[in-house]
Length: 214
Image (cartoon, rainbow, N blue to C red; front, side, top):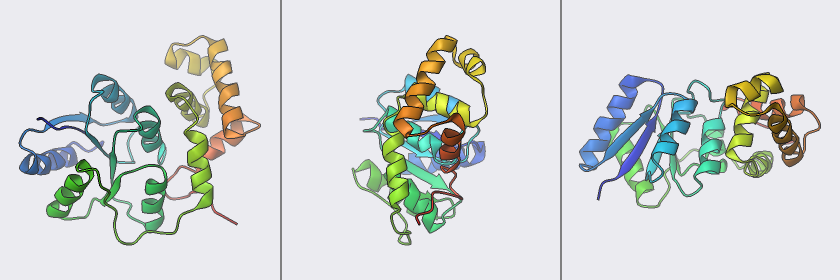
């Protein structure tokens, strides 16, 4: 049987290197590619039976862990293996809390990359040994964001970009009243009293920041 994988990374040379490593261990592999959050969304819609996504966190249109959280909400059964040059223990821990099946630093040898991919495809997990402690605030944020529909999550990211309801409606081909309904639902689900507070929550998804526990 063919294994279907999606490589989501904005660097074509790195996508090609991963594809080569995949073909060495999976001769029957079928590989799709995405270079931005929007092309990731299109690829997910076009390939509903993917076996694994290899995801770089830093792509155009994504904010921190937003692409990972989008995938967990849209395809909760689809394993996601994060591949990132930022291998700080806090980043690894947050990726795990936000639902990644594994985390591979971009600096690892090809053999380690192949071992991690094989482990996740077999239903397991693969994370570097050094991970920070779990953060209750991140766990709470992940639970709140999991309540959003994919469309609400897209609207939330647009809010964080400073887009007005009229602009969001034009961006997504929606009626402005529909956007208002989405915004109200988003604020309620996130426990926010304003768009600004919701935007601050999105900023906390940045891999380098996070929510600090008191």
